[in-house]
Length: 226
Image (cartoon, rainbow, N blue to C red):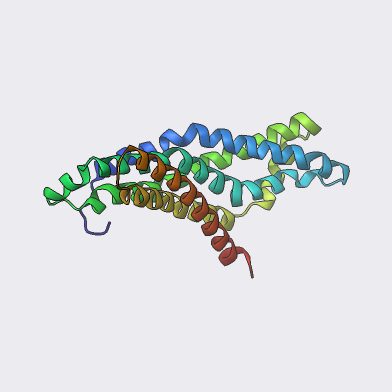
Protein backbone atom coordinates (compact mmCIF):
# COMPACT_ATOMS: atom_id res chain seq x y z
CA UNK A 1 0.00 0.00 0.00
CA UNK A 2 2.85 2.38 0.79
CA UNK A 3 5.29 1.17 -1.87
CA UNK A 4 4.11 3.66 -4.48
CA UNK A 5 3.03 0.83 -6.78
CA UNK A 6 -0.70 1.12 -6.18
CA UNK A 7 -2.64 0.73 -9.43
CA UNK A 8 -4.90 3.77 -9.28
CA UNK A 9 -6.99 2.74 -12.27
CA UNK A 10 -7.74 -0.57 -10.59
CA UNK A 11 -8.45 1.22 -7.30
CA UNK A 12 -10.96 3.56 -8.97
CA UNK A 13 -12.65 0.59 -10.59
CA UNK A 14 -12.96 -1.12 -7.21
CA UNK A 15 -14.21 2.11 -5.63
CA UNK A 16 -17.06 2.15 -8.12
CA UNK A 17 -17.85 -1.52 -7.48
CA UNK A 18 -17.67 -1.25 -3.69
CA UNK A 19 -19.23 2.12 -2.94
CA UNK A 20 -20.87 3.75 -5.94
CA UNK A 21 -22.84 0.65 -6.92
CA UNK A 22 -23.91 0.20 -3.28
CA UNK A 23 -25.44 3.66 -2.92
CA UNK A 24 -29.05 2.70 -3.81
CA UNK A 25 -29.36 -0.19 -1.35
CA UNK A 26 -27.51 1.81 1.34
CA UNK A 27 -29.86 4.76 1.00
CA UNK A 28 -32.96 2.58 1.08
CA UNK A 29 -31.82 0.77 4.23
CA UNK A 30 -30.80 4.00 6.00
CA UNK A 31 -34.07 5.73 5.08
CA UNK A 32 -36.23 2.84 6.27
CA UNK A 33 -34.25 2.37 9.51
CA UNK A 34 -34.52 6.06 10.44
CA UNK A 35 -38.20 6.09 9.49
CA UNK A 36 -38.91 3.13 11.74
CA UNK A 37 -37.13 4.81 14.65
CA UNK A 38 -39.11 8.00 14.04
CA UNK A 39 -42.36 6.02 14.09
CA UNK A 40 -41.40 4.42 17.38
CA UNK A 41 -40.30 7.56 19.22
CA UNK A 42 -42.30 10.42 17.72
CA UNK A 43 -45.61 9.80 19.49
CA UNK A 44 -43.91 8.92 22.77
CA UNK A 45 -41.92 12.16 22.72
CA UNK A 46 -45.04 14.11 21.80
CA UNK A 47 -47.05 12.67 24.70
CA UNK A 48 -44.29 13.58 27.15
CA UNK A 49 -43.97 17.10 25.76
CA UNK A 50 -40.49 16.45 24.43
CA UNK A 51 -41.29 16.71 20.73
CA UNK A 52 -38.53 19.32 20.28
CA UNK A 53 -36.01 16.55 20.99
CA UNK A 54 -37.20 14.22 18.22
CA UNK A 55 -34.89 15.52 15.50
CA UNK A 56 -31.82 15.52 17.71
CA UNK A 57 -32.48 12.02 19.05
CA UNK A 58 -32.91 10.59 15.57
CA UNK A 59 -29.85 12.44 14.28
CA UNK A 60 -27.65 11.07 17.08
CA UNK A 61 -28.79 7.50 16.43
CA UNK A 62 -28.34 7.95 12.67
CA UNK A 63 -24.86 9.45 12.80
CA UNK A 64 -23.51 7.22 15.55
CA UNK A 65 -24.91 3.88 14.38
CA UNK A 66 -27.36 3.71 11.49
CA UNK A 67 -25.34 5.52 8.82
CA UNK A 68 -21.96 3.83 9.38
CA UNK A 69 -23.23 0.46 10.62
CA UNK A 70 -26.12 -0.23 8.27
CA UNK A 71 -24.24 1.16 5.27
CA UNK A 72 -21.25 -1.06 5.98
CA UNK A 73 -23.50 -4.10 6.39
CA UNK A 74 -25.20 -3.31 3.08
CA UNK A 75 -21.84 -2.91 1.34
CA UNK A 76 -20.60 -6.13 2.92
CA UNK A 77 -23.66 -8.03 1.74
CA UNK A 78 -23.47 -6.66 -1.80
CA UNK A 79 -19.88 -5.76 -2.61
CA UNK A 80 -18.09 -7.89 -0.01
CA UNK A 81 -19.57 -11.16 -1.22
CA UNK A 82 -18.78 -10.11 -4.80
CA UNK A 83 -15.13 -9.53 -3.85
CA UNK A 84 -14.92 -12.93 -2.19
CA UNK A 85 -16.57 -14.76 -5.08
CA UNK A 86 -14.41 -13.03 -7.67
CA UNK A 87 -11.10 -13.78 -5.96
CA UNK A 88 -12.18 -17.30 -4.99
CA UNK A 89 -13.06 -18.04 -8.62
CA UNK A 90 -9.66 -16.74 -9.72
CA UNK A 91 -8.00 -18.91 -7.10
CA UNK A 92 -9.71 -22.19 -8.05
CA UNK A 93 -9.18 -21.56 -11.78
CA UNK A 94 -5.43 -20.95 -11.23
CA UNK A 95 -5.56 -17.33 -12.35
CA UNK A 96 -3.77 -16.34 -9.14
CA UNK A 97 -0.96 -18.76 -9.97
CA UNK A 98 -0.72 -17.22 -13.42
CA UNK A 99 -0.32 -13.79 -11.86
CA UNK A 100 2.52 -15.13 -9.71
CA UNK A 101 4.36 -16.47 -12.78
CA UNK A 102 4.36 -12.93 -14.17
CA UNK A 103 6.21 -11.82 -11.01
CA UNK A 104 3.20 -9.80 -9.81
CA UNK A 105 2.43 -9.83 -6.10
CA UNK A 106 -1.15 -11.20 -5.83
CA UNK A 107 -1.69 -9.46 -2.49
CA UNK A 108 -0.78 -6.10 -3.98
CA UNK A 109 -2.79 -6.82 -7.11
CA UNK A 110 -5.98 -8.17 -5.54
CA UNK A 111 -6.05 -6.88 -1.97
CA UNK A 112 -4.60 -3.38 -1.92
CA UNK A 113 -6.86 -1.64 -4.48
CA UNK A 114 -9.95 -3.02 -2.76
CA UNK A 115 -8.81 -2.10 0.75
CA UNK A 116 -7.81 1.43 -0.25
CA UNK A 117 -11.07 1.88 -2.15
CA UNK A 118 -13.06 0.74 0.88
CA UNK A 119 -11.20 3.02 3.29
CA UNK A 120 -11.53 6.11 1.09
CA UNK A 121 -14.98 5.78 -0.43
CA UNK A 122 -17.25 4.12 2.15
CA UNK A 123 -17.26 7.35 4.26
CA UNK A 124 -18.63 9.19 1.23
CA UNK A 125 -21.55 6.77 1.02
CA UNK A 126 -22.07 7.09 4.77
CA UNK A 127 -22.37 10.89 4.49
CA UNK A 128 -25.12 10.54 1.90
CA UNK A 129 -26.84 7.77 3.87
CA UNK A 130 -26.80 9.87 7.04
CA UNK A 131 -28.35 12.84 5.28
CA UNK A 132 -31.07 10.70 3.69
CA UNK A 133 -31.79 8.97 7.01
CA UNK A 134 -32.19 12.28 8.87
CA UNK A 135 -34.51 13.53 6.13
CA UNK A 136 -36.45 10.27 6.41
CA UNK A 137 -36.94 10.92 10.10
CA UNK A 138 -38.11 14.44 9.31
CA UNK A 139 -40.65 13.19 6.77
CA UNK A 140 -42.09 10.54 9.09
CA UNK A 141 -42.24 12.95 12.03
CA UNK A 142 -44.15 15.42 9.90
CA UNK A 143 -46.57 12.80 8.57
CA UNK A 144 -47.24 11.08 11.90
CA UNK A 145 -47.37 13.89 14.47
CA UNK A 146 -47.30 16.94 12.18
CA UNK A 147 -43.97 18.09 13.63
CA UNK A 148 -42.88 21.27 11.89
CA UNK A 149 -39.66 20.78 9.87
CA UNK A 150 -38.05 23.84 11.45
CA UNK A 151 -38.42 22.37 14.96
CA UNK A 152 -36.94 19.09 13.72
CA UNK A 153 -33.95 20.75 12.02
CA UNK A 154 -33.29 23.05 14.98
CA UNK A 155 -33.20 20.02 17.26
CA UNK A 156 -30.74 18.30 14.91
CA UNK A 157 -28.40 21.31 14.99
CA UNK A 158 -28.57 21.57 18.78
CA UNK A 159 -27.88 17.90 19.47
CA UNK A 160 -25.44 16.96 16.75
CA UNK A 161 -21.79 17.96 17.09
CA UNK A 162 -18.71 17.65 14.93
CA UNK A 163 -17.17 15.00 17.17
CA UNK A 164 -19.99 12.59 16.34
CA UNK A 165 -19.48 13.26 12.64
CA UNK A 166 -15.73 12.64 12.88
CA UNK A 167 -16.29 9.37 14.74
CA UNK A 168 -18.91 8.38 12.18
CA UNK A 169 -16.46 8.91 9.31
CA UNK A 170 -13.71 7.09 11.20
CA UNK A 171 -16.06 4.15 11.70
CA UNK A 172 -16.92 4.18 8.01
CA UNK A 173 -13.24 4.04 7.01
CA UNK A 174 -12.55 1.18 9.41
CA UNK A 175 -15.63 -0.71 8.26
CA UNK A 176 -14.81 -0.18 4.58
CA UNK A 177 -11.27 -1.46 4.95
CA UNK A 178 -12.41 -4.33 7.15
CA UNK A 179 -15.06 -5.55 4.70
CA UNK A 180 -12.58 -5.47 1.83
CA UNK A 181 -9.84 -7.19 3.82
CA UNK A 182 -12.01 -9.96 5.29
CA UNK A 183 -13.80 -10.76 2.04
CA UNK A 184 -10.66 -10.66 -0.10
CA UNK A 185 -8.83 -12.88 2.40
CA UNK A 186 -11.68 -15.38 2.49
CA UNK A 187 -11.71 -15.56 -1.29
CA UNK A 188 -7.93 -15.90 -1.49
CA UNK A 189 -7.91 -18.84 0.93
CA UNK A 190 -10.40 -20.79 -1.19
CA UNK A 191 -9.31 -24.07 -2.69
CA UNK A 192 -11.22 -26.75 -4.55
CA UNK A 193 -13.96 -26.05 -7.05
CA UNK A 194 -17.27 -24.31 -7.62
CA UNK A 195 -18.81 -25.68 -4.42
CA UNK A 196 -16.00 -24.20 -2.34
CA UNK A 197 -16.48 -20.82 -4.05
CA UNK A 198 -20.08 -20.74 -2.79
CA UNK A 199 -19.04 -21.80 0.70
CA UNK A 200 -16.29 -19.18 0.77
CA UNK A 201 -18.72 -16.46 -0.29
CA UNK A 202 -21.12 -17.42 2.49
CA UNK A 203 -18.31 -17.45 5.03
CA UNK A 204 -17.17 -14.02 3.84
CA UNK A 205 -20.63 -12.57 4.46
CA UNK A 206 -20.82 -14.10 7.93
CA UNK A 207 -17.30 -13.17 9.00
CA UNK A 208 -17.49 -9.60 7.70
CA UNK A 209 -20.75 -9.06 9.60
CA UNK A 210 -19.29 -10.42 12.85
CA UNK A 211 -16.07 -8.43 12.51
CA UNK A 212 -18.02 -5.25 11.74
CA UNK A 213 -20.09 -5.64 14.90
CA UNK A 214 -17.00 -6.34 17.00
CA UNK A 215 -15.21 -3.33 15.52
CA UNK A 216 -18.29 -1.18 16.16
CA UNK A 217 -18.32 -2.29 19.80
CA UNK A 218 -14.62 -1.55 20.27
CA UNK A 219 -14.85 1.89 18.66
CA UNK A 220 -17.82 2.77 20.86
CA UNK A 221 -15.94 1.61 23.94
CA UNK A 222 -12.96 3.80 23.02
CA UNK A 223 -14.85 6.98 22.14
CA UNK A 224 -18.05 6.91 24.17
CA UNK A 225 -17.19 5.14 27.44
CA UNK A 226 -15.49 7.43 29.92
